[in-house]
Image (spheres, rainbow, N blue to C red):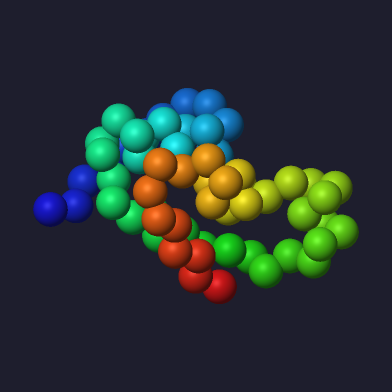
Length: 61
């Protein structure tokens, strides 16, 4: 069963927080495929989620 919600805050921390609270088994999210320079200068929500998520993360380009 799918449901939606709206959460305030930094996207990466909000995704991780909801995954922990809901007991998620998998997070599926899109990745823009930015270059390494762009990731260093701008940061990456998907990179943050991969490093901090309590479950597996599937990135789809």
